[in-house]
Amino acid sequence: MNLETKITIYKFTPQVFTLTHTSSIVGYTFPTLHKGTRWFVDFFAFDPAKNEMRRKRYYINSALSVAAKKRRAAEIIEVLTKQLSQGWNPWIVVDESRGFVPLEDCLNRYLDYVDRMERKKTRQSYSSHIKILRDYIGTLVTPTKFAYQFDASFCNDFLDWIYLDRGSSPRTRNNYRAWLFGLAEFMIARKYISVNPVEHIKVMPEHDKFRKDLSADMLKKMSVYLAENDKLFLLACMMQYYTLIRPTELSYLKVGDISLRNQTVFVSKDFSKNHKDAEVGLNRAIIKLMIDLNIFNYPSDFYLFGRSLKPNKERGNADQFNKRWQKMRKVLKWDNCYQFYSLKDSGIRDLANAQGVVVARDQARHSDISTTNKYIQKHGVQKSTLDFDGNIVYD
Image (cartoon, rainbow, N blue to C red; front, side, top):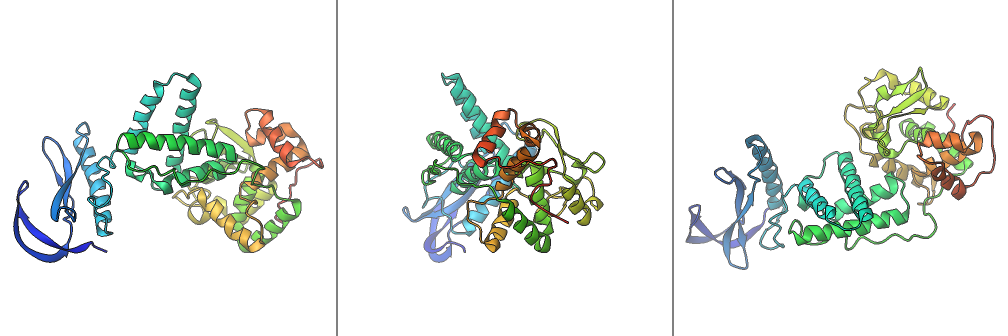
């Protein structure tokens, strides 16, 4: 609702206010674009500390083209109007006059700072972290654009993406948290933000791995339940278990990436974790389910897992896999340690048992067999078979 208060009304020219009378009015004016030597957006808001309306300006980068300036101004006006209508007041909260600096500009400035660091390993590590952060922003349906959006929600979601979607360990997630804290301090020092959004994000315990793989009985129980109640999500689970394609990569797959003739799925370097093109083998159960779901009746440029997990022209966020998993897990009464990414753990374990660690390495697209061995050592090899039928069934 609008911020309403008993205030003094002023008549004003662009530079001068004159007192007239008092009344109960909305305590702000709508943001307006001003063009000239320097373009800026301004508005007036009531400052209760000074008992007067004060002008607030947000300058637009002079180096931008006229079209870019207009777009930037429109974005700023949209955000300011929404914030003001919800009760925000620039004079009551801490001043964030540089909050509308593009986040990409902040990251570029940070990289300039990183390039001056003495240790080569530190430079490489921090530069890599920035790249991963940009990859995450690229996965968002509505990408983060401005510095002020670098808040607690953004940082929490990024760390969840590191841990859940990328399947990283608690230690890796905590390392990213520590780095993110430093990045926030850098932004505070340069007035891009006013508080550190990472400060209250807790460090994750680094003892035994929280995520556990699924037993054969659990996989069969899951497949029976989903075959009856949610075949679209069953397909996502089978893709995770049999193809070992990461959740974010799954969200980018298109119908045309599936080859019935070759029985493979193409993973493009444009969105793969290792930035390499790859063809991953399919399983006959996956192909049968795809045919039953009429997947191949959709246009080839449709995302395989669009919104609501249906083939769609619009890409669905990778987080929808976790949300659908949590809903199913509640019905099956499983503990939180069983996660959507547990399907990949289980798939590597079962494929290595059935056809050997080299096959599992290639299917998982691991750069080194030692990575695959880590899965096997943690989850155990108990049996082997001549053919990998797996434990997710679809008849």
